[in-house]
Length: 486
Image (cartoon, rainbow, N blue to C red; front, side, top):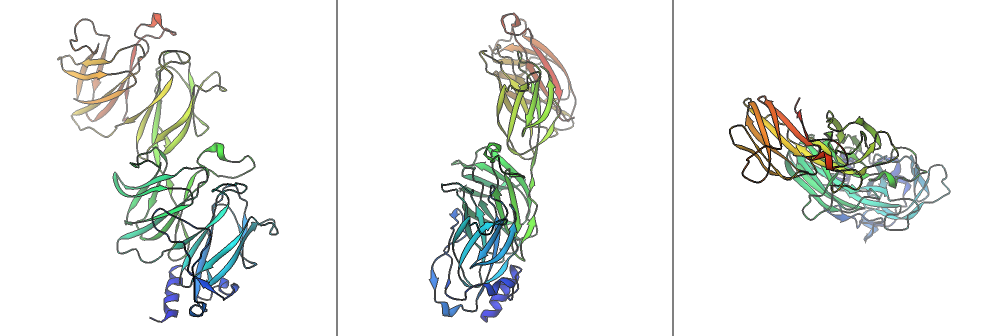
């Protein structure tokens, strides 16, 4: 096949005309084959090397685009050999491709408002018939391996095959550790980007479909906490780039930076020119159960925003949507908003319902105040069946055994701070709660009556003190029954 035809095909795939305006801005001198390759877990490089004979590519054209992924950098202008080729690029922008004559160039990046000030200058090599993404990553002013640096990625926009899509991930979040990224089709794990560190890129080819992209802390078994998750449609095939950008922790955002700089996943479709693709933050649902017997009414904040106010002991809130991943949660006394009794991250997975049970004692009690995160199973159990869960939140009570009126054991050996499900035929029940001794004789600790409807899900929250007279608050044992699937 003639070389010109090959070049036209590649540049057409990238959405670049052979006579694109950038093609004439280069030196047309020596050419080079970039050293950067885009293979799983490879680290992107900030320059390209490996020269070839210039006489073979004097008319060759490559394609270049720029991604501004530095969260504390202002809008920038990019120069090649002194010519401004991409101007006033704001954070998060991924440009379209421009044709560039093959050769080695000096790249200079300046603030768009002051093109005399240089924030980066270095060399980059462009080979003919090749596409590149120059990703400006890191932080201005940093003096470590996460300082502001353009990472040069070679873009593979060849056909990924029938019924396939190609997805590349670039880790560009400067305060995030190495991550494992899992692609899930429903409950099926399709691909894993394993241990991708800042500045690294990894690629996977997957079947066409709709996916949840889970971003987790890096662990040997890829089972770290989910820090973020997104729904991504790859049903149309082609080649995509996903850029993990922004600050994972709100505390990392510099005070002098304005605009949204939180962690996000920016996705483009690369074949046919840069097209923005929406990666929708995946949703979970959660509710809060106030089961701490000596705690006052509380306010609950997620992502630094008030979610629930004045939640009293024994209250169980309605479910509320939450972004998946490790969400920052704060619990404060309703009458003292300056004091946190809990502040930390609680991981939520996409499409899962959770109960956050505030258990234990505020202050110097034997059982510290803490939120226990329970994964809720609200799937329909069947027309003639009820699903019932018991949550043990009584700090001075032993492990318990729950027995139905016919003597059958419903829950066995349930300890403080835990919950367990069982399924029962629909009907009315009188459940007796005993200490877990095995004989179930004498007076029960308490008795719970429940009318369990078919195809319904319930939770019984046991809270308060078994012997309130000896405890810091006079809140005796109670069982709060809640229907979960309503």
